[in-house]
Image 1 (cartoon, rainbow, N blue to C red):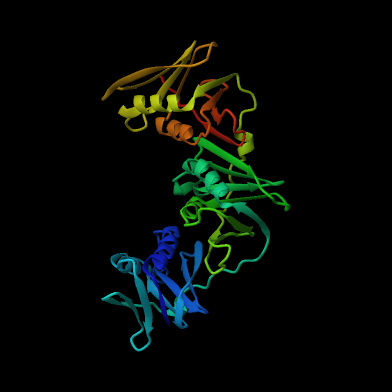
Image 2 (image 1 turned 180 degrees about the vertical axis):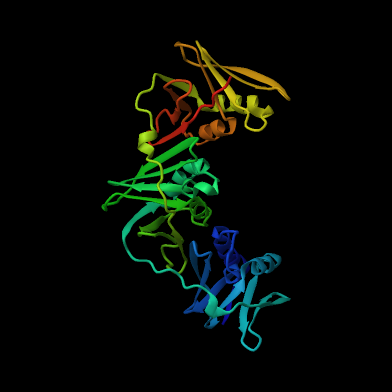
Length: 373
């Protein structure tokens, strides 16, 4: 194998693949990436057996071939090079990969090609297109609500619920629930699958800034085809991920149907007060919200540190309400809201409250209050 390309092009592809791989590698060969050169195209493959990625790019192919090389070492070497022409060649006599950039030359040991896993096959099933900016937006609105508790793996993922030309992304860690939706073109049956959050986060960090993705959902896996150039089909990345197994909570049953209070507030003003009052926060000590006539009193009291309090003028004239929340969760809920005005929907102080934008009906955030003495 012998090719010519530029440092930045190949480095960006490899970094994208590396980000998606799990740090817990069970097999030594999975520390490598495979590069395959043919027909003026370089295919770069990476896998951790749960997620597999193929990123394709145009290069000058002088000699076709394949090689598996340690990804972290390759990344370190490429980062050390300036942005310039890069010559890559597999030395068949020594089975080393030669990398030459300007006056620098490295020779890297390679892995056994026959031990590298095959790239998963895609079978067309439930397929649809979605605008990349739309998918990125939806992911950003829900991913903070994913659990990090590996004992409940299903909650570490994001539910994708597709039905009748509509898509909802849903995430919950059992303390809060985020739902974001959008209209799409889809004519198939309803599909509900849970995708690892790390995979969707990787997709949002791709170089694509516009255009669409092709998504295909099979029984045990989901694939995303990211076309980076409409004119050049060689600039394409395919991400295939296994789906998480288990029963995701029926989120529609978690949404309260009747609220006693709906309070409209200025999002930026409330967020500023919450951040300021919780600046003394330690170990997720709850922040207290007292809804009184004409104002909201935000306070925090920590025995070892001290206390903080600030009032915020609001349009409210009903009974006094005292509710406490995890301050980090409350701030994250306010951060995902788009509109200038938000609505606090409250049933009663110890039942989940709903935060939603005043105008956007496709986004909401449920948050469990904390009982305080």
